Amino acid sequence: MALRLYNTLPGKVEEFRSLAGNEVRMYACGPTVYDYGHIGNFRTFVAVDILRRFFRQSGYKVRHVMNITDVDDKIIHNSARDGVSVKQYTEKYEKAFLEDSATLNIEEPVLVHATGHIQEMVELVVALEKKGFAYRADDGSYYFRIARFPEYGKLSKKDFAGMEDGARVDLDEYDKDSARDFALWKAAKPGEAFWETSIGSGRPGWHIECSAMAMAELGETFDLHAGGEDLIFPHHENEIAQSEAKTGKPFVQFWFHARFLLVEGEKMSKSLGNFLTLRDLKLKGYKPSSIRLLLSSVPYRHQLNFTFDGLKQMSSNVDKLRNFQLRLTQAQLPPGASEEMQQLAREGVERMKSALDDDLNTAQAQAAILEMVRKANAAMDSGLAKKDDAPPLLSALERFDEIFAVLKDDDAPKMKATLDWAKSQNRSDISPELQETVGSQSVSHADIEKKIAAMEAARRTRNFPLSDAIRAELNAAGILVEITKDGIRWRRK
Ligand code: AMP
Ligand code: ZN
Image (cartoon, rainbow, N blue to C red; front, side):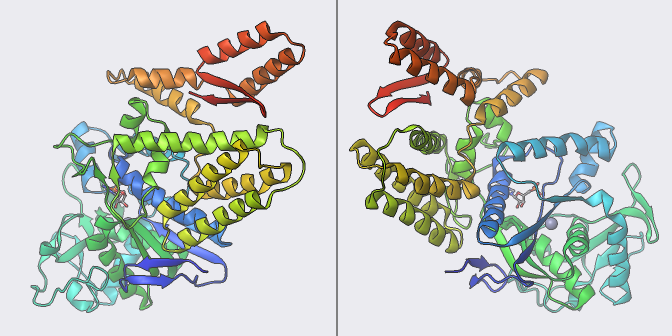
C-alpha cells in the first residue's frame, strides 16, 4: 500500500505521488522567533518531522526546507520596545528554538531566513506589479490585488465574492472577515527596521517571505507545503495567490495542515494560564521522550488534548519500549527461532506501516508496536523466545524509532541542559522533579552495563556481598536491578 494523505486543497485524502521520481520537495512554515516555542508549535513541528521521516522510510529522498521568520510585525514591535536591533532580538529565540527542536529529536530541515532573502522578495513584488497583480500605495507600500486572482479562496474554501475591491489590510495576521488586498511590502515607518531596496525602503510582509523562499529553494512547483491549521487563511491562501500569479503554474501539490492542540481540554492561551513552552515542561521534570511521544500519539488531523496524565502515560510507554529493547539485547536465549515470536515481529512492522500509510495514523502505529512488545514480553516470560527471535523484534523497534525517535536513552543530558539554562536565568520554577531526573539519569548506559558486568562476575565467584553492594549503589543512583533466570536486568526508576 502506498501513502495516502489528506490534502487541504481538494479537501480529501489522496494517494501521495511525488512530482519527480523518488524525491520529495517539501516546505514547512517555521517559527516566528519572537518568544520561546510552545507545545502547540511543537505539535506541528513534530507532525512535520514524522511525515518527513516516514517519507524517508518509504524510500523517498527528502528535501525539507523551513523558514525562520526573523522579521514581522511582532518582531518589529518587540525589538523597538526593547530598544534592540531586530537581529539581536531574534537571535536568542532562534537559538532556543533550534535547541528545543533538537531536544525533541526533530531533524533539522534546510533553514532559510527571511532577512537573508529580501532581494528575492523584492523581485517577486516587482514581477507581480508588472503583471498587474500588485500595486503601489501612496505611502510606498505594495499590495496584492486579490480581485485580479479569481482563484483566491480555493485553499480555505472561502467565498470572497462581493468583497470591496481595493480595500486593504496592513497587518500580517487577520481573520477572514477582513480579507482584503494584503501587504506585500511595507514602507518604512519612523522607528521601525527597514531595508533599502529598488522598490524603496521598507520591509517585506510575512506572506511574501514564504512564497519567495519556497520557490527559490524548491522551484516554482513542489510536492508539499506544511503548517498548522491556523495558517490556511490568510497565510497559505496568500502564498498561493502570490506564487501562482507570478508563475502561472500550480505552486504546491499537497497541502498538509496539523490541527491545533488543546491543553487539559482548553485552548492554550496566556490569559488562561495554561500556556506551556517546551522549557516549562522540562522545568516541571517531564522528559523530552515522553513529550515527543505524546505530541505524536494522536494523528495530526485530530485534536490532541495535551494533559499531564497523558505525559505520565507516555513516560511509562517509553520505559516499556526501552526496557523491552534492553531485555532483548541482554537475554541469554536458547538457540533457534519460534514461529510465534517471528510472527509478532512481522505483524508489528506491517501494522505500523499500514497505519502510517493511512494518512499518518500515528496512534495506531504506536499501538501496534506496544502490542507487539506486550505479547513478546509475555512470550519471553513463559520461556518461548529463542535466540533468532531477537533480531527481527529489535529491527521492528528500530523501524518504529526511525519515525518516533524515543528509544535512545538520552533524556539525562537534555534535562541537565535545561537545568543549567534555568539556573543561568535565575528561574524560580525549577522543580524538585527536574533535579531528581537529572540526578537519577546521570549515570550513563555504558557505566551501568559495566557495573552489571561486575555484578555478574561477582555472582559467578559467589561473592554475593560484592554483588549486593553494587546493586545497592545502582539503586541509590536510581537504577533498579532485577536478578532473573535469564540473567541480570536493569531499568531506570
Ligand atoms: P508561529 O511561530 O506562531 O508562526 O507558529 C509556528 C507553527 O506552529 C505554525 O505552523 C503554526 O501553525 C503552529 N502552531 C501555533 N500554535 C499552534 C497550536 N496551538 N497547535 C498546533 N500548532 C500550532
Ligand atoms: Zn509560511
